[in-house]
Image 1 (tube, one colour):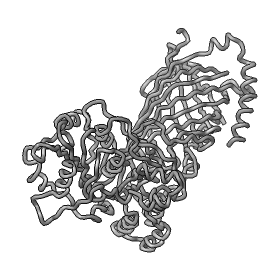
Image 2 (cartoon, each protein chain N blue to C red):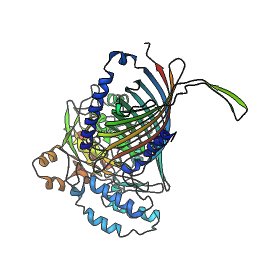
Image 3 (cartoon, rainbow over the protein chains, first blue to last red):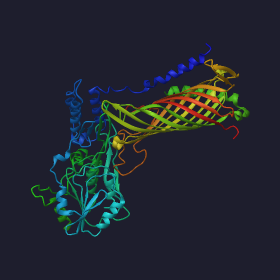
Image 4 (tube, rainbow over the protein chains, first blue to last red):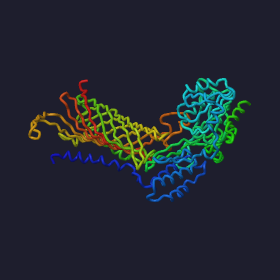
Length: 349
Length: 287
């Protein structure tokens, strides 16, 4: 045994193969049932609106799992699992593969309430300004500023906002058009709302799922808007235009506006989407996401903290933030945007 | 695991005391060689965070390590910093995902000779190692969870077996009976060290993985994170071959295997590294 030490080292070296012993088992990537069960369990463990939407998730599992069989095609499996996700009636609940993306498309629950061409032809004209993500111009004989914000792209910055607000500093009012704004980066919301307040303002409260029971949530946390130290628009009315296509960060902005005295919502109920989406991958490589938080107006938060959860669930704005003034487009008249007209009227009062 | 820790602690205390009796002389301590080690590592690695993917991301990683290493047959102390980073991906059927993963690691280890097993060429040492990782993962496709990070730290029990494989006599021969060569006497050392997690802990994301501070306009680094004590397991081993140069510096080649899991009922993080390393050890004895 001249080289016994070599054998000893080689034996010890073999230990390196044992890492899998303390890892969890791998999933079968091609088994449709494993991917289905994995998705169902992830949603069951973390989705935040089961109670609000009164969804019997166990029943959904039974219903959709029975549609799966060994050897099912990827397309068919995707349809089954995508349909199960759409039962959540939440556009933050999606399934994404290389060949399709599932979505509930909540905006189709309401009428189309925005037509860019009507706005351009009859209100802002051809010479409108484009300042970063904002399209804007004077309307109503140069008395009111109209600002179109089509998406929360995460590109709102102080240079753009300073320009926009300086331009309309003498306007009688401001119209902020968030119709068909599907959301994006919520940081943009804080950037915009910071221009509409003079002091720190508690605009809504939020809580996050933190346990296996469908009603396990963290304590409420405050969402506070801090005023920007620069051009602001706080002493005159702001009309925020919304519709069913106003979703996610758009709906959060609408929700926050409830706490701002100089802001009114005009148009249709928003699409909702008041939960922060989070996701991951399934064993078969598809990507999923769904909401894990809930947001409440200050009044709802007060009721919630008073133990009236059922009442709050019944009126939860996840199903849409209602407008202060409900107005729908008349699609038979293509020269008038009734929502803008109503906003102008409100500013003139 | 707690029993294992208590057993190991008692064992090390006993071994350490007997070793310290032997090495209590200041002269011995002063004469103990000390080195600054700078090394490069490359290798294969894979990981998965069950909070975001049941599939393992696999890839090649490379890194650098800077360590202070002081050792002789009686005692050994090594501490320093390692950084490694790599691009990882998984591919399943027609789907794939990518992730950039970086680790910042601090470690400290102290080993003592176990006198009972000491022989002329063999040394057995035992002791402990404290290791802490800060992992940073970037995967833009995960949207609100596109940046993930956690801290994993472990107190490990360590055993090191080393053998002096020095060439004590000059050797001349011909390679393939054609090419003559002369090998001079050279000090060489081969060692194998196994580290086993005794106290395993981590600071990991909360239940929902993401936190809601983005919604509430606050950005603390570890919002909704949880400190999980006695959770998970870690095991690593390193095989080192050290060749000393004429100027008392040394070259070191190593193979490192490191595997750990954060444990917990759900949403474990699991990682395994297989790294080949080469390092220069600068002799600091005269500094």
